[in-house]
Image (cartoon, rainbow, N blue to C red; front, side):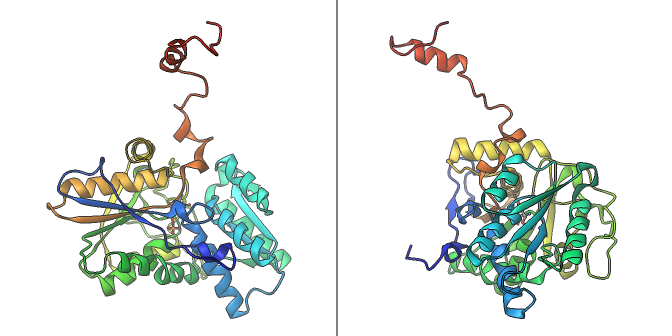
Length: 348
Ligand code: PMP
């Protein structure tokens, strides 16, 4: 660690950590913990990447309002970058995403415009496009913006290549939301670590890639309609109701070795297992990606090395099904501990 000129200097350079108790014997399983980014998710990288690219190209003018459609983490990352760089920020967000995300963005100074859950991801994107056109705001277009993938090629991919230099990496496991991580990292791995297999996880309930059905697209690359294989799933931040342009590019690049379908409950379960068995506190998509990595680990030859992306912190999910079984009141066990000494007991 060093001194930084602003919070923006702390984006990226996230740690790679060995899994000890949850990994099968004979396999080296590592996780890259994106919760170490300043606002707790992988999307801090995208936020900084797209804003700086737009400043450089002149597309974003000083003081211009920035707008994006986001399930939360992008908005939170953008709110940090916009706060530091003095751009007003408006975020459109479907109402079903967790309440703490909205409040976090508002706390960081952003305005959050909700869209009805019936319209899903396509509706919040349409709303953002409309607002940008009407008011002359800068739309970051996270699902199509090449600056998203470029940032991952420049940072995430470089970090991975450096961290495994002189060693081998047999599998890299990720999910996709925009596909920025997937596209930016996989193209660097294909060039510099061609023996590393790229494994992509997606929700079992929304196996858009597995379906093989192409996405209908507008001329600018945005989705023209919801994908027919989409069904709601609990992995907030993964697989919207369309295949993003950045993700489709990776299919066309033919660098994906395997696509694994992850049932929703597995994501929730593995998030909790990571917390309770490894002390790694991460969100639902992290648990889901980890479930995929464990499947790879179970079938991999002895001595294999696997790296699994963990996109965000678990703190973002307190009001979601991830914490549904976690009681606020004392459990019977806890009451028994309390009763085992005389002081400070509650009446029975
Ligand atoms: N997990 C979570 C929680 C996310 O917010 C995102 C980004 N939407 C992802 C995974 C996927 O990252 P990417 O957009 O780079 O595909």
